[in-house]
Length: 305
Length: 124
Image 1 (cartoon, chains in turn orange, cyan):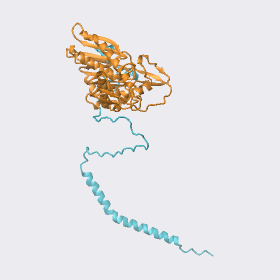
Image 2 (cartoon, rainbow over the protein chains, first blue to last red):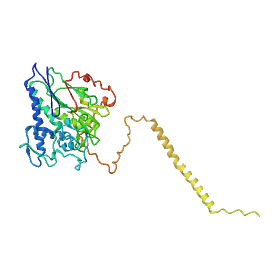
Image 3 (cartoon, each protein chain N blue to C red):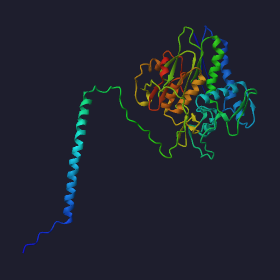
Image 4 (cartoon, chains in turn blue, yellow):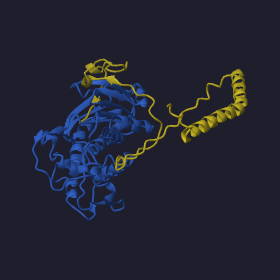
């Protein structure tokens, strides 16, 4: 049978589903505690988090925890595989766009004075100096990090890795889903893909085994700043919310971190370029929903439909 | 008393010479053009007797690329990795486009009612 544990963390709804015997293993109760610890390390909204403290220290190496180091390394990978489209150095641009507090508390209509330090591009992560042996990170002046979706994907992945010995497990961290394996009867997990235009409905069902799937979109976290529509996906080449015709991009990949990074990249690239980019990578499959209501299906996604 | 007829002036002489030259040129043109024309007709008849060209041998016109407009900025986006062009691209209508249903037989199967799905992925 399937044991479900919904809870709230990292500003979103979490759900862990485990396959097991009649009673769920006691370890399942520890999962919210894990998330609380990870959030305390990785959240930019907590002024005393490890990340916030790192963001206040410039030009000197700071020894970081295993968690922050691991997420930082995944961020490096994400920047490489997306040609720089997904990078944690977008924090300043995010703040400039008005996303300066938890989205639950964020005013949906903002008036902001014109900034004197108008950003035209974000810093590449390659400016950050790190040392593996001492596990230190040194931020140059003016560079701040925001792990955002990478942290959610990483947390989902970690949860599945810790729980998979108890049976097949699925972790949904606010849309970023990690799956350990197929169900005991050999059947795949059935995952719905939300329709961005009709709340609480799915428009597609994916049949997934061991993999990751994630959706990035501008349909939920959006607001207006001086009358301009804003959302939380920053294009690092412009340091502005991405100008894109994509509403949501759902990507299936070997891991949820890859899926999350790819989904964000596709959203920034736009529908047509995003589809080409997915097709060029043999480990990715995706569904892209455009503003005009059209939906692009990559060739490999049909393996999961 | 009747006027004495005017003698032929220099203009008349030029006209006569020009007319003569043109007539002389046309005569010689026809003398030498005649055999070539016959040969051309003969070649055309020979070609007409040959089998038609292989349809595969299609001569495609040369398409020249348009020069970049002076001063136009080069694309600033990322350089994408190469790869095969997408071969499958199905477009269906979802709720946002004002259309319902769709061309994809898999769309909306059971999912709208939540049947069978454990959870859903959506933007967070």
